[in-house]
Length: 337
Image (cartoon, rainbow, N blue to C red; front, top):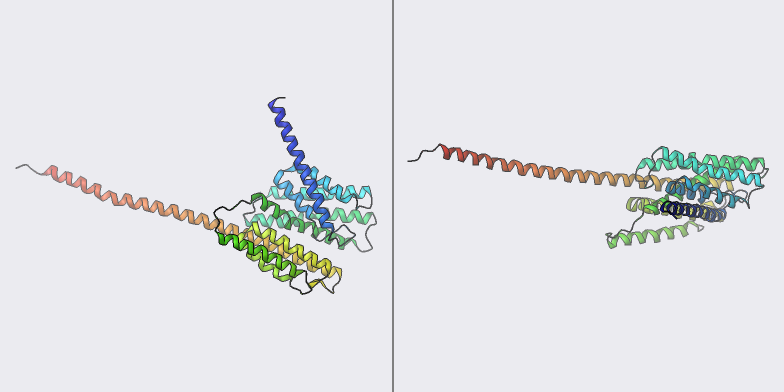
């Protein structure tokens, strides 16, 4: 076997492994998302597979799309009213992240999300615009198959769209943060202590969200803390944790979701989830960009001060040379006795 053949075999094996990983993660997170279904046992307020799909495309490229299609088919085969409907829904679930990926690539999206415009692109192009495809195709397919009650198209479409969008806004940033995360060896102990305190506070507030007391708003200060102190690396996981606890509370109809209709709870839940996601993404991106700008200004100031120091040394050295030349002239002009 030649070296070229071995290289092709290795690349093919790596591609197959990536496709299998995307399909497995899509299927596993889809099963988790279905635990909190609201409409027809298949439409949820948070659909993590959309975040898995878009992150897979951003990190590995277009070769991940067969894994998305395979995972979507395996999830929907046991839910769809018919094989034709399952295929149609699978196509919509595959085209949506592909459309989001194309829109993000066209705008020069950076997976590190260290600029404010990257966060805006993920929100409006990756989540809001791209997920219109899956929601429209899926809801229309269920409507044609007679699987929705009378007047159930638009509620289903709304939950489907917001669930897919929340999957992009909450799950994809976590995976992108994990890709760029690194072990901070020079971090002081106080930094680690603050991070541990943030984790403990997030868990504690999460449990408070599921209690009968309406304390869901306590998650917002945590997101601000995470974004200001740790930026994207902590804000994205914190937003996912806070919204997950909120979904559990909505499913149990506890806290602020007690005593209301399904439609009211759905609107309140998605409003909170959207607020948490936007706060985490936009604030952490703005803080990161500010820190980078401040670092560039400090570096420019150091370079400028070094240039000024060198110029001052050159200026202070010039009079000495001039005086030396003058002394030589004076000595040359003297007459010997």
